[in-house]
Length: 346
Image 1: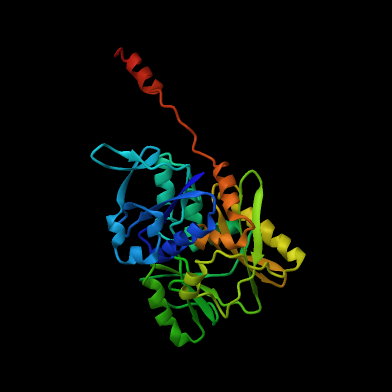
Image 2 (image 1 turned 120 degrees about the vertical axis):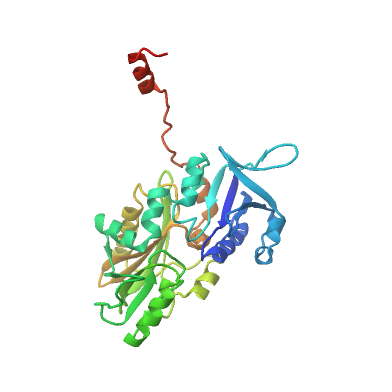
């Protein structure tokens, strides 16, 4: 199998995507990888394996690589002898944040008929915006943490009791997230959050909870990872998550009561449903007094959460062989022909 890894993008999480893509070089042992980088100006570059190093991108050396264009069914590189198709079987969308998780890449892949592993357009919309995620969860009977919304040019008064968590609605990797314990800290936390988004969520900082991560996908069967209990003080900040995304070694499964584990897995399956088919996602859950709350959906987890699976590479291969595709609509112009015939026109 030949797998294209698409990474970079015009996103605040651009660098994390690079880290994830570099990690994939170690994770895939027998699968040939084709590395396609998306610059901040949204240009495509074909990156050789030997150049998959962070400095190659930070220095701007990637601009010397072959530029690619999208055509029906493939990426192509141009030369004096014509366009040359970049050969691969399936594309793995590894762009975190904007472009990758908001549906742009999904739309492009659908439009150009390229097989890809990633949330489809509707799933992207639901998981990229934390507000939409909460509304979606509510509609399928999954509990979420209470919240209130603040708009950039609106009131900054909140009704939620301190301490609270302030987070941009459309951003991941804990960028722009703050814990506010004193009301005097609120304005600064909002200033930080509004630097990244004009819509901000304020949630109560819940004490006495446990957090669990569950990743997985549906191939021709459910393929669930181990349940992980992240070890942290209050929350994983950007720096910790940045390092976390470079993991390629296995982690230890959480010591969790079997009944709680079943609730987490059932909640994951309900969230994933038919909406997220064709993708590998991770859901972050809170557990308190036996109740499970969805914290957020990670539609494109850092390094695809490979460290939570027994054999991530084999699972990706199985998923690539079980992708769903858009209905092929045949246009026969029967309606226009019938009108023309009625008017006596050829």
